[in-house]
Amino acid sequence: MACSKRTSRGPYSILFAAALIAGSSRSLAQFQSAAVSVLAQSSSHLETDYGTDDRMQTAGTGAYPQFLGSANADQVSGPSGVQVRSEVGLELTESGLSASGSFFLSISVQEGFQSAAVSALSRVWVDFSIGTARTWKIDPGTTTGPSGNTLVTLEHESTQVFLYSGEFGGASGQLEPGDYRLAITASAEIETTGTSNETGGTYSVGFTLGTVNPCPADLNGDSFVDDFDFLIFLPAYDTLACDDPEMPQGCPADLNGDGVVEDADFSIFIVAYDALICPTNR
Image 1 (cartoon, rainbow, N blue to C red):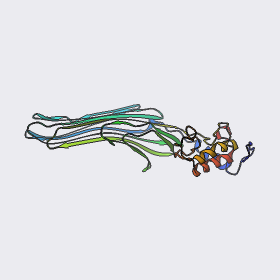
Image 2 (image 1 turned 30 degrees about the horizontal axis):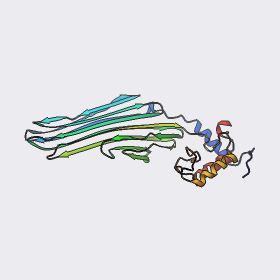
Image 3 (image 1 turned 90 degrees about the vertical axis):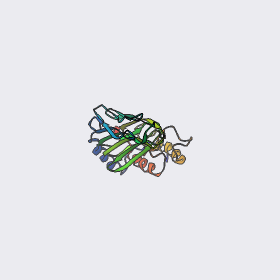
Image 4 (image 1 turned 180 degrees about the horizontal axis):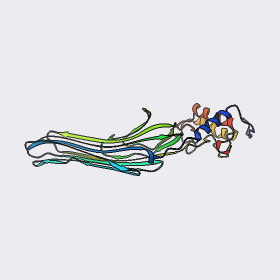
């Protein structure tokens, strides 16, 4: 291809513009209208020569922008006892959320002890809808305690978009319009018939929605998708992997956000190349 500006649009232009107009009439998602459920749950079973007891407590309440829950199922029987604590917190903004939680479980075995079992659960559900394509970003997940005790999932109408467990790095992608559920769950349990034991943990998760770049194939930012952008796209296509040291920072040619620059990205690029002018400048 010669490095010259084209001055006409190809046959894909009308379809591309029609899709853009159809999408622009749909509103952006806002988390203040999301359906939210937070749950902290603690349960314990303690059996000793002095008696047997089962306890459970659940809690979770709030309203935009803050939701909280704290549950306690401590109990003592003779000199033995158990502690079970679970907490959850959720902060919402129009386009994002941050969730955190913790749990602590302990069994103290003393004279007359027979058996004990304790469990704790910290859970967040956020059901939201988006009327137009949005980007998503999840911050690196931080956890302490048992490996894999924290699960973070996003589902789109029963189809899983992602699942992360325990410690995980940040990630991003794009969502199509529709209904979604973001779920964050942390849990732990211990039981014993003769040995004291305890465990605990914390987690922190951040999730944000953003607007989709209407012209991602405009790699040099001049509001056109032309030969100059193709000369930027081509070496990235040859490099392939976004984590390759030779790839430009941010991997801008990864137009579908899957971590590689390949044929799927070229298919997106060629439609924009045929349209020539970025949508925001028409």
